[in-house]
View (tube, rainbow, N blue to C red):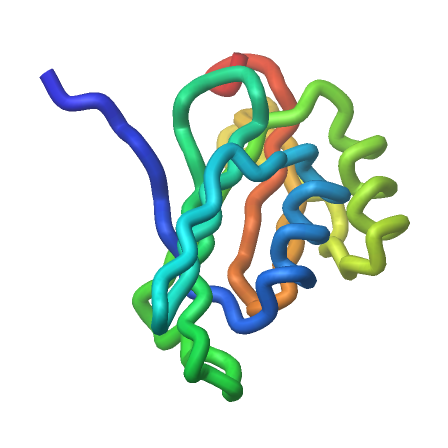
Length: 131
């Protein structure tokens, strides 16, 4: 049986990305591997083994084109309003909270926020399917 290990995104500014993911989501550096042309930074939240891998290509000085195929990362939080306030305090610009009710009952409450490279992150309130 396979086990999900990590998801990787390419980032332009290591310091800005590490700071964002730490301040907004509490992710800490679990490992950092430095090579001649790139650096890999593995971030964890401390609750499990899944990691977010940040890849920094050392010769890159222009933002990445995220294209039209990228979806999003998602985090589950206990207090959605507090998580949104934390994102704002960190200098991010989170969107408004959405109470998703396609059939009249709340399926999920969430907001989206972009990281320093423009990757979209969904922040979902814990409960129901996201326990």
